[in-house]
Amino acid sequence: MTEPRLRLSGIDKSFGPVSVLHGVDLTVARGEVVGLLGENGAGKSTLMNIVSGSLQADAGSVALDGETLDLANVRDGIARGIRFVHQELSTIGSLSVAENIFLGDYKAGRAGFIDRRKMADGSREALRSVGLGDLDPRTTVSTLSPGQQQLIEIAKAIVVKPTLLVLDEPTSSLTPVEAAKLFGLVRGLAADGVAVIFITHKLEEALENCDRIVVLRDGNLVSDDIASETNKPKLIRHMVGKSAVFEWKGSAAKDGNPQVEIRNLRDEALLSPINIDVGAGEIVALFGLIGSGRTEFMETVFGFRKAAGGTVSIGGNALRVGHVPTSVRNGIVMVPEGRKVRGILPSHSVAWNVALSSHRKLSRLGFMQRASERKNVDRFAGSLSIRMTGPEQQITALSGGNQQKAVFGRALLAEPRLLLLDEPTHGVDVGAKSEIYEIIHDLAHEGMSVIVSSSELPEVFAIADRCVVFSKGEMVGNLDRASMTEHDILDLAFARH
Image 1 (cartoon, rainbow, N blue to C red):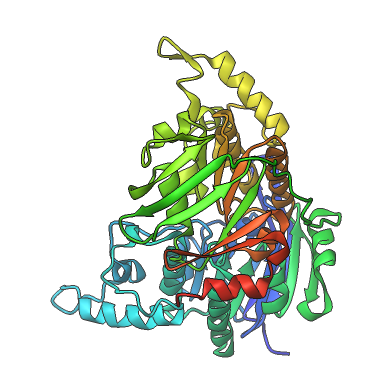
Image 2 (image 1 turned 90 degrees about the vertical axis):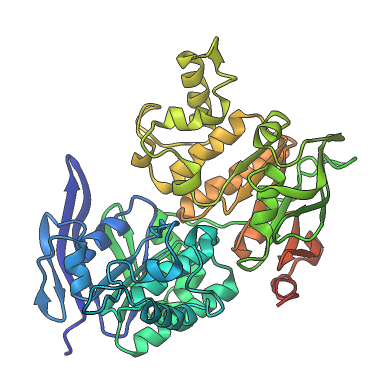
């Protein structure tokens, strides 16, 4: 029998008194794509951090091509051909695309000068591989969308021809079409003998694109199945110990005049004039490919992005467009994509993060009223089921799903009438995703207008009363529930391509 490319034997890991991994055994063959599933906190990232060298196991061994590894750090892992593309972006915004892809190896010649032409040529090849062939390698990364930055992270990993590639939620910001291109790349790498471990919360992707699927629960490997011999309900049971189904629960939209009226709104770069009405209690989903304008539209409504024209009205009152404080005072709140970058203050407590947008309301004579802060945090912790040891716990100690619910709590503390959600379940597990859908549904029943930008069609069908489709900065479709089909939504998304 051929020795597997990767063999993990009896991996244990604890952090202080908390045991995270319990004797995990796992093999991955050359050219095999293995899906690694589990809820947040199941131990997936810890296990892969041990494989990559950023953590060391307390017990057990890691072997690559039959040789036991003793990796002191990530650099040791990279030297052995192990590349780990993390869920949270590590791109450096002030550098160019080429500089990010070749970070640590600037192709310096004998005289020590950087060979930018060689970097640009290598970057173009890697960018074509991930579907960004039209992107200029000289582009500054900070100007790109999160989805494009995610693909640059992957390009950076494959430009060195890895032996083992670990992808952590690589499609979290990608639409199905862009994800399909990525999986075409993964299959090509596997055909060349690269072993691939694919961490995901998207069960359909794992079933369609992996050879095997393994599930971790509470630090234990609870199942290891051939993908074609398992199914979504079985995987959910393995992950959470019970079945979970996401189903649309019907519309909570109120009759009467729309609560939100957006007229001829455009920005200075991408958006054509956009017109959208949203009723009280209505949930409208925005769908489109990367660069379609759905995120830019939400940011323009909220004021993150400067408007070049148009109006936004709440309850018949026109607002000053392009000014975040005005938006918040008048009941517009946004939960942005990428909680680690734009959603949370990682060095602060849960309480501080929840109260961040409402310090003026919770303060008196310029001093924060800690009793009011704690009371409100406790209220939202209960209503949103935020699992934490207490309000003073550092927010980064929470799982991804609980961090996201804390960001929801901050938004709700501002008492919005219009809630803008950009990829609200980005990187959260199947259990937390279900809880977030319930929160959105309950908010709509309370009369809140909700606009959700999502790259996941199952999410659109799970929560939306209506789907608005964007393509290259234009609103190309406005489908009511009865007219929403996967085929028609994707067809509209390609309207301007």
